[in-house]
Each structure stands twice: as structure tokens, then as C-alpha cells.
Length: 347
Image (tube, rainbow, N blue to C red; front, side):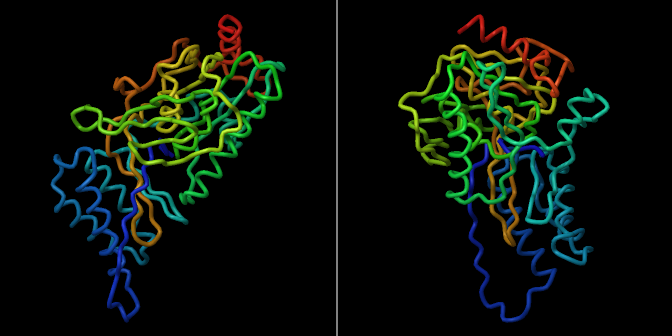
């Protein structure tokens, strides 16, 4: 999944349906949903002015009505996203996930057996020590279905606490952040959880269609801001973030959207290196729209750029390493070996 931002601003559209004394039909549901989806696309999609919306909306509703249930009709959104060139757009509900067709396909045969095995094990967020002196953080893709303020803050706090407590209880030389499995999801909690290593700074910018800065995203005093809006926050348990300790970021071809946002967040910070392979290239920002019937829609609303406003189609490593993964013994993983070299030289 390409995420969550990755890059996710929650915009709630309240739909009030009055006067429906009879049971709603599939046709009614499709019409209500279509009106909401296309309202948001026509108002917010990055390339909205290039699209003939009436034709695409009519086709979507016609194709959606061929399905026996509303949920099944959602698969027709792929044609909408493909037609408007939004490969980063998608829908998801409690029972399904409906992405656009990616222009760049990734195949397991092109990755090392160790990577495939680890990916299929569905790695989760984790914080641990390597060789007793290096902090190791795994941040995979995270699609959080519960987007309430309390849930987002709780998840962010949980991750932040693990990072800070490992640092407080050990004399670490540096940190390694592994983003090889971060294919997308909710970027705000990921970046805010790293506040202890980032401190107060602009982490990335959202650019408009002309690649001018539209919205500044920043960390300040444990809070993640999108413009002036606080998206997530943590209660800090350390007096001062450690913004100079060496940090090595490991990326790969699967690193996309929110994974790429994490990398952007470290741009401009001292003592940082990027190791691995070029990222996937989902450097467009998605805003999250709440649609009727508990459907959520991350829709592309801008380009993602670093703190200086620099945009690129994907992210390149400072040290290129191709498929020398070793997840059974991380100290023999070539990416980790290079990360440790960097930390030792810059501590």
C-alpha cells in the first residue's frame, strides 16, 4: 500500500441525509458516495483542472451500478484514479482496499530471498540494540484505520516512548532507521515518534501544482503541525532531543510515500546518511478524506518536498548497496555494516 505519507491530512466531510424513511438501495448508496468522492476530487486533486469530470463521474456511476452491493462497487474507483492519472490515490474501508494501478510494478523475483522472507513475515515497528551500542529502529508501512485523535496520539506516544527509553537506558553511539519495508501509510505518527532525533524543525513541505510551497509540515515541542493544525503530539520524556547523534537511514525500492516522508524529515539535520537503493518514488502528498459509509480516500493534493522546498521524483542513497540484505544476522547485512561505519566515524 502506498501511504500512507504518507502526508495524510484528515478532512472530514459530514454528509447529512434527511427524509429517508425507506431503506436505502444500492443505487442510493452509490449516488451519495459518488457525489462525495467527486466533490473532493474536483475541489482538491492536484491536477483537477486537467480533467473532464462529468464524463468520468458518469462512467463510474454506470459501472458501479452493475454490482450487487455497495462494497463491491468500490472496485470501480480504480478506473477513476487511472483515468485521471492519480496512481497514488486509493479508497479503503473496513473490509477492502482499492488502489489505483501503479505505473511501476515491483516483483519479488527482483529482490533478495532474505528480503522477501522478511517482508512476508509482516514486520512491525520495533526498537532494539545492535552490538550493544547502536540503536536500531524498524519502521514498516502503517495503515491505521482508526484515525481518531486519541488513537493517533496513542500510537505515536507508544513508538516515541520506546525510542527514548532505549536511549535513556543505554550509552548509544548512534541510530539506524530501517525503512526498507515502509511501503506507505500514516506519516504523521512515524515522524512525530522520531521527535527525539529530529527536534524542532520543518520536516517537509507540500507544494502546489506549480511546485510552490503550499503547506509547511513541522515538529515543535513534541507536536506535529500541518500548517497551523496539530495532527499528532507526544508527551516528551526527555528534556532535550538529541539532534546531533549520528543517524543512518536505510531505504530501498519498496520505500514509498510515508517511508519517503521520513527520509525528507531528516533532510537538513546534521550527521545523517542514507544507505541502500533508490526509493520507489511516491513523492506526492495525499490528504485523507472521510467519505460516506465509513470509506476513507487518500487523494493526491500536492508534491512532497524537503524543508528547503526541493522536490524530486524519488530519493537517492548516499551509499548505494544492492541486495546485500541479511535479516537473520543484521550485523552481516551490508547496509547495517555501512551504517555502523558512518556512526563510528561521526560519533
